[in-house]
Length: 246
Image (cartoon, rainbow, N blue to C red):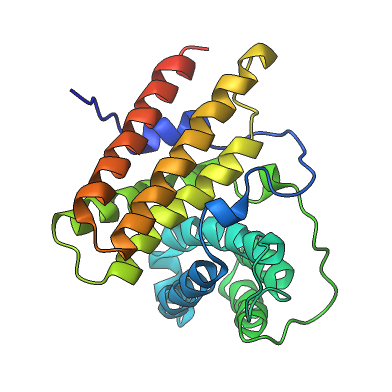
């Protein structure tokens, strides 16, 4: 029997750290396609916009906004480094930086200014200079990334019961896979350096299962998608058991 623990709790143990990596920690072509990344950025932009339209909306949705932006920063870096070309590839670093600026905003005015930069970058009109290279371990903070992964896992559980839109449904799994790539790089929760290979083994396995689940959903193979999802959850349980007391 698979024991599912709180997904948020699991991600606390596999979510943020500090080892610098040169380039992508795991091969992005095995995580998702560049078109998947573009589609998720577009979907995220549509989701974020209403949360920035007024002071009340910004206050009410601030936590969800920061959670989504943790993924948006990762999406920007993934676009920049993915071996496949895309209409957003050159704008990836600007998307990353705008998302991180928006996540750090302390007021609606600051948030709206960062939003304009994010929206322009996604439309292929990035402003300013933005380095392509970035430390994957520092793209997202622990708690927002944890909450985003938790939310996407909950959504994936629901759609696996009755998928309606294979392309949209698959992005829940692929988003978790991308967050797992950042997790692989981010090892500050590993107290004993000798345990780092095991940490990365769990993160890589989570990515592989979630990428496979997303691809199965795109192929309308719900049974296989569910099998891979459950295997990913089992990986999370094992990671939790391995690191929760260390």
